[in-house]
Image (cartoon, rainbow, N blue to C red; front, side):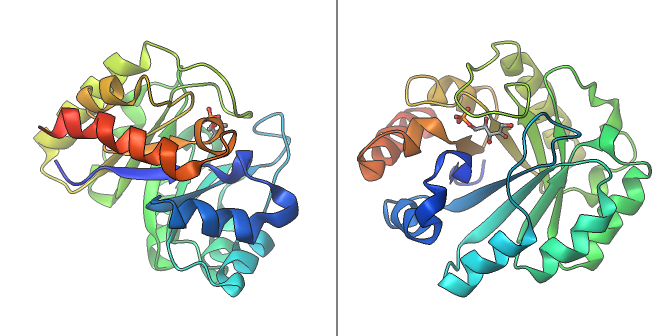
Length: 224
Ligand SMILES: O=C(CO)[C@H](O)[C@H](O)COP(=O)(O)O
């Protein structure tokens, strides 16, 4: 397994001082910035777009920005996010009319590409596109809001996808998003995840470093 990555979801950050808050969480030891894009159409919430991604780059954020598109349609935002500094772009397969085309568009834009599966989305969307994926993201809550509880059936789905990735021989990260906390991160890692999105568990605590250190300590027990 590759090194575990911790990706705080800025959905729970302080939007009034976003640049400072992102800097703070990166200085506290986070690896990647997870950027949740919600359109009040594919999901019942409205968040941030390419201008905010560019603003973070202009502010000086150099870490990878992992853009999770919860939007429909998908394609027209891809070039905008690539230009705005996205490193990874993931989208929900059922929100795209042409799955392979959307993946190609991401790659041609110079970003890493990934598919996102809601708790009830079947895995058959992976058929025929594994060679184009850098990331598979399993949602462990229904998308739209931070602060929800981890759905336990995600653990079985993680085990299934971990096997698919290992059997495929491709270099694909297995990311998980929703309800990830210090007290369940080890179990989630043991099920096969290697990239962990956590929003409220980190940003709702006063000391980001303390939470991230605790998460890493839990993950160390899995690596051992
Ligand atoms: O994509 C998301 C919701 O759609 C968020 O990234 C996710 O829910 C993280 O928040 P939390 O860690 O508080 O559950």
